[in-house]
Length: 161
Image 1 (spheres, helix red, strand yellow):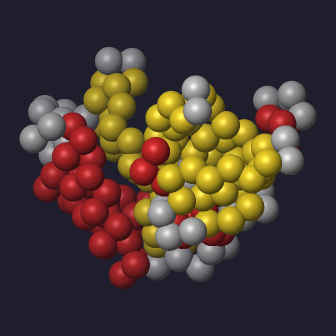
Image 2 (cartoon, rainbow, N blue to C red):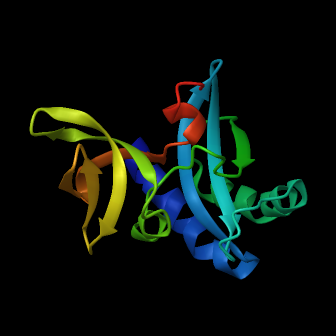
């Protein structure tokens, strides 16, 4: 199975299981770190507090690991990492974007009007697109054109990060 199909299958499996553990999936990444295949899973509590404790991550390992094993994203051995989304939070779903409306976001997209990197204030979320304000203009970007999106931290925007 191609990597994108495995990634999609893994996301779907974890997303479906997360609510019964009072968690929600933020994202899954398939990476190679220092030559070792790695599955990195970002989760957070379903209560929108955003606070993920070490105990919650340890408990999540018990239900995430079998799901990863069932999809088997890499041939042979790999490392599983469970993490909170952190301060430079990933935005992937409509729900994620809605939660961070009014915040500064950084996007990497397919080429749109000659550019693929965007930083601006997330002003609105529609069914299949988002709106970000850049230099006083409200720009619509289709969600299917977004490759990566993050909330931009103040520290980063002030040039300290």
